[in-house]
Image (tube, rainbow, N blue to C red; front, top):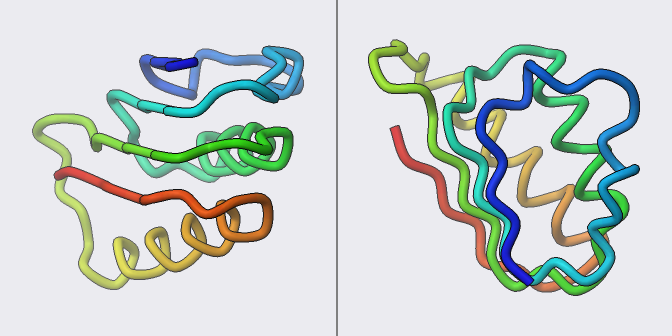
Amino acid sequence: ETLIIQGLDGYTGDVVTIRPLKVKELHVLGYGGTAKEWEHLKSFLGGAVCLELVRVEFRQGDVVDVCKLSQFRGGLIAAVASKCKAKVEYYI
């Protein structure tokens, strides 16, 4: 019911093949904010139907632009809200 993913950059193909349907908590560690990672994350969230918590931790040492962080937060909430009511957390 809890899935922990370390860095989304290493995945190839469609992340939804992981079968996230029954995942209640998703923890993404080492998120770098690249376009590739964002597409993988959106793909995964599109297949999840019963998420209760999405926690994303940015890579340590990365400088995160406030504007990009705001866009990320809005996009993440929109992607999650379309499928379920989940709490969204992110850490820098």
